[in-house]
Image: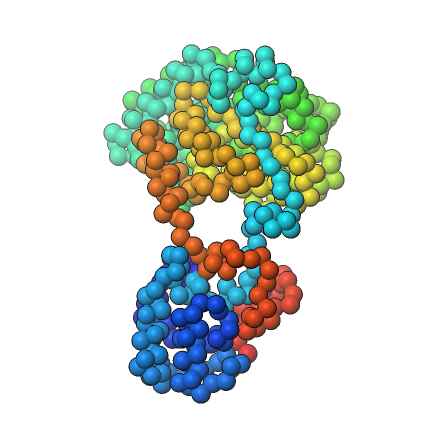
Length: 462
């Protein structure tokens, strides 16, 4: 059923279509679409069913040739890109889908805006800001730029043994762009002969350094990173917490890598020894920093402490992102940039939610200059112009092959967006109004819990 609703599966065989349609059989008034109404009426007339009957065991052979022809035509026809079973579907009629943007547009939820940073227009201490940033990117030194070149050289070396495609080729680039700590930890593991894992959307990649060229690039990378005194991402984080007063509102700080998250949590705990700081991560690696101590802690306890205003700084990994409600915090810092706008949307969704006290929250995206991250973010930020709906016109993910030709990234993103604009059954149902239908052929008078819904779906249609 989910594949039918999303359009991943299209039913074209009339026999299979009839098996889906006849139980439960929609009543005529369950739809406003004229041709579907004609089909439902013809079926009832052929089978002698009254208006309220929603079940029939009759085979398709009991329908007249004319009715079967109407069914075949409707199965082939799309409306706004939506197939018949995307539009005429019992789940569509009974599942209430309310996107936050729709509820805000209807006035049912207050609109929460987002101010994107870095942006000089919002800055209190412009002198320090200019020392940290060049446009949207952090200033770096020669050692970092040379280390980054070695990360790219490592990726090219991988290509020579057929291991240089997609996420694997970009692994060292993304790690060094996340933080100097993550870059060093990853390079040292590889150089020591250990395996590094990279989890993508659909697989886990394992990588080891094998050739002398790969190892030489890692040695040079480590040598350069070890010369750097202080990561500009930490300096920028401290600047916004202190000088820009973000600490007063509370902050959630995200990274896609545990190495980076723990490094930033350790660093901030040393800087703010009197504050409780949480590290929210997967695989039982969550920690609480307080008064010089660091102890293991359950994630549920951290969430409770944030809700009760006991924690004003929470550091988290993407692995722990979903289900984390932090509306008591008013700012968000992305230490690194995932090449997946969906993850960015999930991150801002932790604070841009019901119960947020601020009319506008702040989101800081940190990328280093002269890196692929800067170029990707530059393309993304061009499309993040709506303060209230940042991600309404962005693709779900930025594909690895798009990164290979960064100059055409914007064009490829736009092509993808246009291809995804076809409506789903939910879109067709809700675009007209946010009010529930008064003509549904079955009533749903309660909001169901996940457990109740699972039990209900196990039962047959009565």
